[in-house]
Length: 142
Image (cartoon, rainbow, N blue to C red):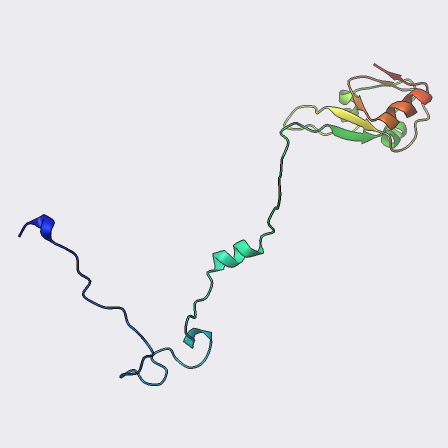
């Protein structure tokens, strides 16, 4: 007999419970309840956790493009005086824009509110309504 000829043989058979014989009424399963029933297996906690997570359906695309910080005209009108120049740096100094990972973000001016002063804008993006309101107040966009 060679080492390669050896074969593994399982010596102990699996315990078959609840088929008559010497084990008695409950066959080692205790009294009543879920664990005493046939086919009783409790779901693992990880599976419950996975089932509770809301699933995202359909096509999802997360853009890697950085979105500009938005500032409303009402805030600009409140904080800036007549004839002042507005750019991302001045908006940061007044506390309307925060730095993103240590850099000034691009800024978009939105048309919520009204402009009563003549302001000069540079280095900002504009919504259509904001651009119309600034030009109607005789402001300037560079």
